[in-house]
Image (tube, rainbow, N blue to C red; front, top):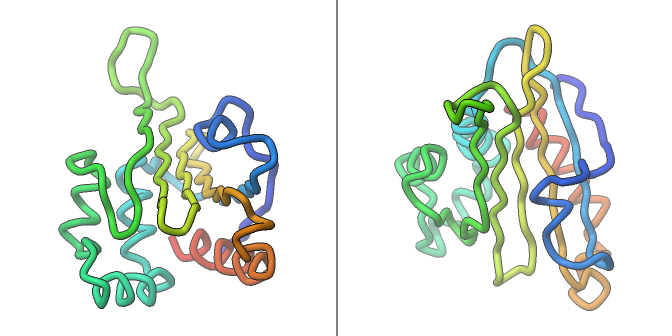
Length: 162
């Protein structure tokens, strides 16, 4: 697994702007060689071996988590995946309005678990920086705080498996 680094949530990101100041947020990044689009990142993340146990649970719960569902989410053809719904998606745009190599990001929320997942791709010299972050609302009331160590470990495994 390549190096996954914890970092502050980038200012101005969809993750930084979501929820209230008292909510929990975390963020991790990983640099990869070559150009990776947001759609590729989303598809690779949800299709990874590391995410397979969650996909099996989602399938048992009869929520959309098939390979076709992943592709539809990645391409922006649906606003739902599993327990999550699309909050906002920002595609990379250049100043002329054409799709470019600037940051692209998406935020997905699960109201059932009061959590959200954030994905962002940032072009870098010779590669792409992949960001993955999480949001938890009402962490002290929800019981999520007791699972934070496992959550952080799992976030690193998920991002490392892309």
